[in-house]
Amino acid sequence: MLPKRYSVIVADRSSGVVHRFTLALRPTLALFAVILALPIGWTVQSRVSTSGQIQQLRLRNATLSVENAKYHSATTALSGRVAALQLVIGELRDSAVVNPQIRRAIGRLPEPDSARGAALRSVALSSPTETLNLLDDLLNVLNIQLADATAGVVHQRAFAAATPFELPTDGRVSGRFGYRPDPFTGERAHHNAVDISTGYGQPVYATADGVVESAGWQGALGNLISIDHNFGIVTKYGHLSKFATTAGDTVRRGDVIGYAGATGRATGVHVHYEVWVNDRTMNPLQLGVTRASQSAN
Image 1 (cartoon, rainbow, N blue to C red):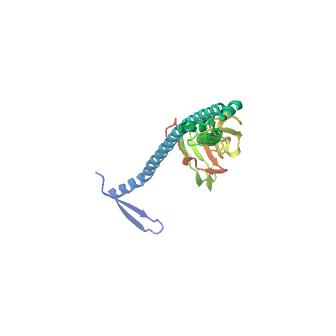
Image 2: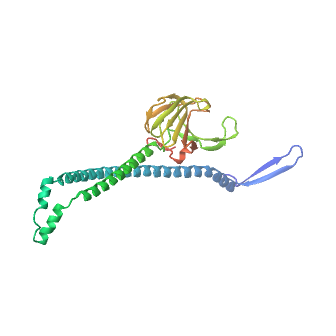
Image 3: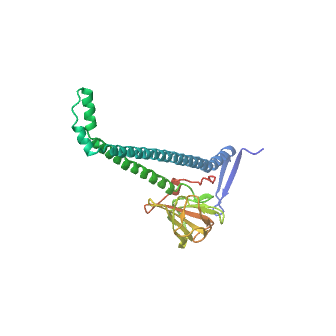
């Protein structure tokens, strides 16, 4: 059976002073358990929080897709109805044209005796041009508004496709965005990306639709790919072992653009991933932390 207390003796050889410390077994074990539990609890909480963010992003993306489908259906239906009304107005305008000789002959007819006959004569002789022109103007306004709504839907879909909300490769985030000790100098420096540790040669994917700005050697970042997604959004992927795309290529979210490596100034195999918005970097983890085909790490 283990003793309930332990004594620790510390002796100073030069002075001969002896210090004695007595430790109770159970409180000491409890203290060690608390110390070990803190990082474990923080890790679990971080993963739970990350999982919740992923679900919210996926839900928002699904909601956006449904809204886009509704807008597209509504604008298509309205466009058809407006076109049909314009066709009817055109037919009415054509039908309203009466031979001038016949119109003069109608005007020479004697006035009807009954009130109903007088009303019918008045309607027949009146010109519907003003009413038709008013309807035509209203339809033109509707056409303009419909075109604006359609353009809004198109831009919304394009903005959704251009927004990066996933990490570019399988692996775990080993380097966070923000200030940290430089891995080479140890000095405090700002890290404007996240690092994803992964296996050598693992595929690296485009995180949103865009056009490849450049694919080449970029000093400390080694083999680097930069993608312009429009709307002021640019993503960069560094330390690649090789490229699967070239400058000028159009890529879609999920396309393989390169392969993980350790080129440039790197301490190991990983992907350096940056997100730029309006010429300023932002934390990619604020947009999302996993690809749809990956498990969260």
